[in-house]
Length: 65
Image 1 (cartoon, rainbow, N blue to C red):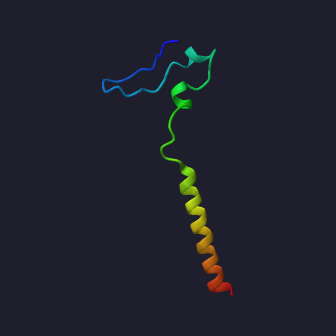
Image 2 (cartoon, rainbow, N blue to C red):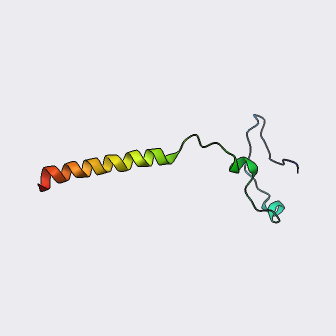
Image 3 (cartoon, rainbow, N blue to C red):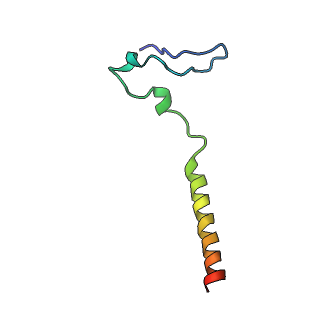
């Protein structure tokens, strides 16, 4: 199977615009499945949740008790 991705002069992959060509196999491309996760959002989310709990606990201890 040939890789039919369009690229510009710099070699950057361009968005696909021929959706009818993939009606028989609508699965994501191998590049999308094997892409490395270099910016995981889960770490940032956990830090934000922990900070929110600490701040909420501090407000509770200061103003409620």
